[in-house]
Image (tube, rainbow, N blue to C red; front, side, top):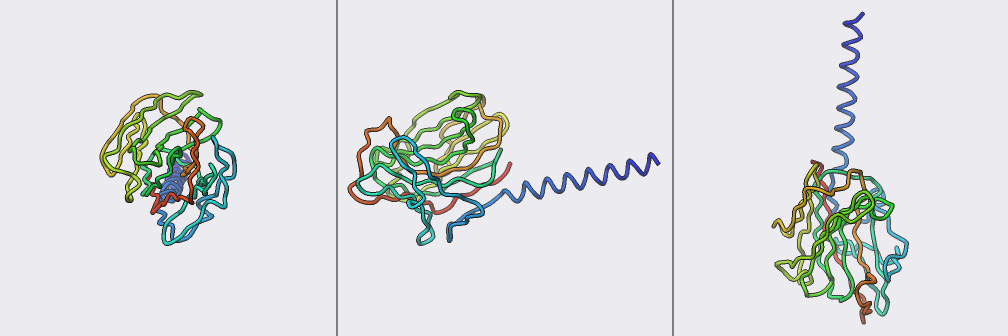
Length: 222
């Protein structure tokens, strides 16, 4: 009897581990935005900074996700994943507009504010500024603004972060720009991309429609 129970336990354990591995593997994806996949993403509808993030400002065209900054407003657009994600590698291939006083975000976040967040925020202008941040346990644990080795408004570039137990690394076009080994969130979060006008910039409205173009978003579990 003891032998039978042991065999059953091992079988159940193996099945559970395989099911877990299958679920984990299913979270890996590359979205090339040939269409808007509503099983993966939802469009944001809320206020953020100076902006109203409106689902009407999110669409797919010519193989790109477009996040619109409408002319003569400080409104923007956002997508958020339906699933929660944890440790892994996250990459967005994007071309930014020249729309000073707005930013593009690519990040993990789960409410409430300051609880769990990993941010890449790029200034939508020719200054080449990029800001990396992390939040955990109710406070901002790290933030730093650096200079990109390219103008993000002139072409598509890869923005990536690798989130692992005890390390967080940020990359631009495959070049390591920043690493932190403490103060990291410890929970699963939703993946976001957005374009908006923060209150800490001066709120200049674009004179014509501007678009963040997202060629692809990729996630690989680690």
